[in-house]
Length: 301
Image 1 (cartoon, one colour):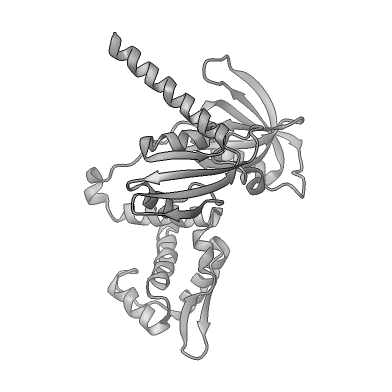
Image 2: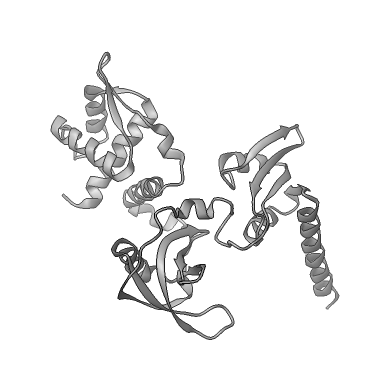
């Protein structure tokens, strides 16, 4: 059976149990045939058990059976909401399954463009798995290209762009895959420190910029519909809703307010206001004033 078809079956089982909470095997099988997952054929219990094992291995999702009711359920639903690779893989395969079934209306499905650099992702993942350094040719915007050997620690997806977190031998550095011109695997091994966690490394930041910006308790006020956007898609794991009125909602963040974070706030225009700390509020004001001056200059020409 084609891998894509197997993945679709995994996703179908997960989504059914998420939607209904608990289902007996008979109920699950009935819906399986109704949806014609395998061209109307029944779900065999042996196949279901193999799928349960594969779902655990691939997504970290545990499907248990209630011994009193004989109903199956997802025992750890919280894994569906974290930022792990399993969660990302589940989301990606879910979208893939929907799009595969939507070829007839492909002209009515509008997707975002993904920048160049994806051709290097396989080599980078392989280097991470093998624990071997890579040599890349890299070109920053407005600069000449150069060659660099680094130890690839992790890759991160942010705003439709892939980034490589690496160690240069002296410090950590992040590189955008779409600025890479060439990547090759070397025979030089490396070991990532046992106590280093890429998740922890990025935990104090929003995005991929990881400079020395001090930690701050940032409070923002969101107006109009923006609070609902922040509730449904939090900007950072530290986000907390601290006050709400019919006119606005206040949210707090404990992070390093780098340019990535401030840029995200600015993308909401006048619907987000920074209340504290004072230096971040002043910095946002200066950015807004520069934007206004440029608009005035354009208007004057």
